[in-house]
Length: 491
Length: 99
Image 1 (cartoon, rainbow over the protein chains, first blue to last red):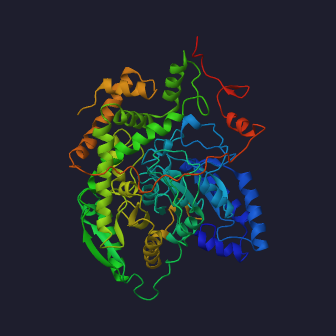
Image 2: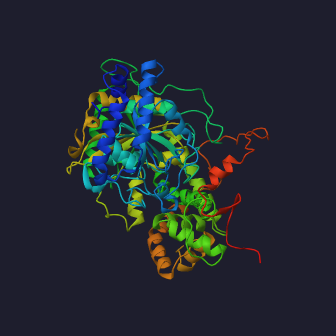
Image 3: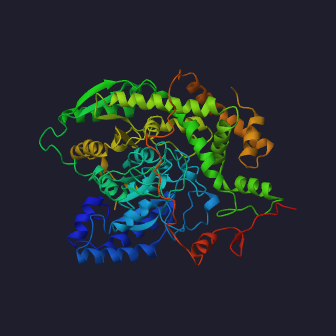
């Protein structure tokens, strides 16, 4: 029971077949047992979690509970949680206690979710393998010699190993969907602006998007219902009427529930470079969509191949500006020895940041520096427009776009760490929806010959979350990939 | 164009990150491939294309210029300064900059 989905656990809690205290206590024990192997959690708040679980049980007894009340949750350690250590995976913030909570953390707490701890991540959310964490890599529950993906690797591994039924993440270039794919779970990146960035430690402000991990698309929808909403403290938060993201899950009952849904298949997503096992699994999923009544449309996104270079100009540029705040004055690490103010800044930042973060700050500083701005940053913003235009043309002929989430399944710890370009290629299919600000989900759709999970990406146009969740949910009603639990972590 | 070790050193200075000569060489080598990747983008014809700085074409929301929070007892200051490496009497301490 304790390894069930959010929706199932919610029913059990409301039927009083299970209490939140029992559930939370049991999952805390699972975390204690698994974390030395997985390194998924950086902070576990047993005491606080049990206090919140008792409050949730009281709320359920009083009849004032939401569907999420009493459900244990973990936050990626980029999300500020008042009174709890928030490290962002960095030495810079190793001892930082958040003075206030992020909007999404407030919303999920308000819904009654029980925060059990903070999860490991690539430092400042920069990475695709979680190996850039100051606190060491997260291990993949399906094969602990492999990475769990990144940057939200801890959240993905924690949900995959059934240590928590749900977790938050942030996605700047694929940091929710890529680890979800590599870890065999669902990861939803909503439309930019749907969830406030208030209280997130910023990486690239025009791309950063908070989102959710769960076992099912339905669980992601339930979490998004609580996380979404206008927030005046984030100037990019969209002010739209509240939506029920579960509303289309069960739409169109019958043998052909996806009748009328047009699935776009960009030829750029089906070229060489993707592992054959992944291609097979995606083709089988497309056949499943057709048997559910969907039609498929072949299309082209001619500029999508430039997503990677555009991203590696824009995101370091924004990061170099955002990370200027870590100067050893107001919070975080300060070097022990220095000569003067300049030397203090330089030594503090040299010691506090890891190698990848420093490289990206240097790239960002370079492309924004005098004489290079037009050639790199402005150019990248122009190509970003061309990519967004490609997608807008595509969505005139289809409702969702489907393809692989990643070109490979999980790789071994250490395999790609010395070659940034090889590492960056992990995000080749996920980056575009960050550049365009549109929603996308990764859901499990099979396993490769090594027994490692494969992710299917479903993208939609801005504010089409309910539609992509509908397509994902209908697929999950006829398949059981999302129900598989890694052997070492079966209850 | 190729990134030089001098470029790396200059960017490191601008970014206020201390970097040794050996580190600068390593960074340059690791970034060589990244810049090759970036160069591909520069070949795209973008004549007349309006730069896209943001996912949404919306204007920045404005609010009235008035005080929305008050903190007469400086509790917020104390809270935020609790995490500072060096403070004294409500001030952040840095190495002497004025002789």
